[in-house]
Length: 364
Ligand SMILES: *Cc1c(COP(=O)(O)O)cnc(C)c1O
Image 1 (tube, rainbow, N blue to C red):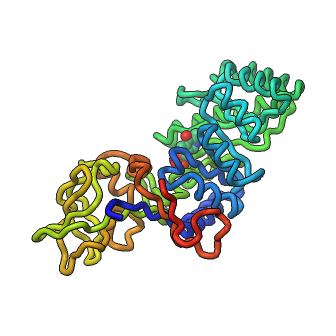
Image 2: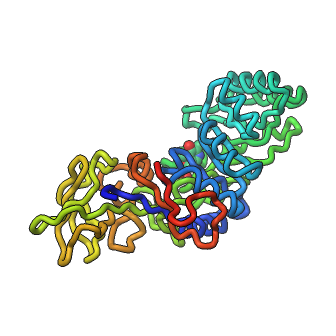
Image 3: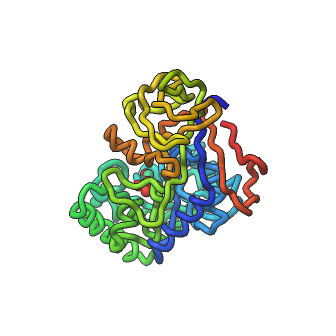
């Protein structure tokens, strides 16, 4: 191969999932898998999480949820929360996917789809706690809850959960959102309903603010060992992904490597310290399909350099890269071209995931 490879470690993911689950217990983990599992590869991550007993997968959209359901079978639960069109709603109900519902209009579409299919749709009502993106406004909440309860009696839906999303901008704002959230849950309970799950927090709040956790925590970034930008290191978590690029030529005191902005490496990362077989060197220039790195003794084609990862070769984490260009670690991963192969490594005895046995190579 003469291009970059994203190495993803099954062992690291499994270890991270254990650490996250222990940290947030008794709150249960929903691993969030949006954007192709933050660029790591939806299918192997979802399959591994399911096999290691993670009881909820957050797919974000319905097509990803349906793809997951095909891989994992009937367990665990899958939650898709993006507002979708009728055909997708029907596909979700048929695939036993839980739906996040953030408007009265969407609730109506879900009820109609359930009626057409003769099935019961599992819904989680979303209260708008102040983000004003998607979610039922406080002033409409009691009405939508009442409509949902009526739809339950008509055997169209089951009110499985109450949820919302925090801004994570300040503790005080999150505290206000939490109070609003608890009030919304109380209104649901006052109708005699007992939701199976209530969920509010994502990575940072679930990790640092136990008092805000519900019975379920939706966690993406931290499961992949991606810490928050400008945030502290996370005890016990390691980056799952490492990006390598092959040496393709040696020219004087510089080495040409097979990675560039076309692969999704921002050219503004010029100057970045990268890992080489002889320790850290500087990324001198980022071109479209290749880049230049300061050379080292014995540099030769066939060797690899490391752009980001857990640091085994001196490379920095995706979040440290992100901080150089004012973004977040997730963005570094999700910007990578889907053409960059994801190679699943360190799979140990876990051979039941249907990937290529010998190489674990996912060809994009
Ligand atoms: C992305 C997302 C999450 C996960 O956020 P992280 O910070 O990656 O843990 C949780 N909930 C919702 C609604 C999201 O969109």
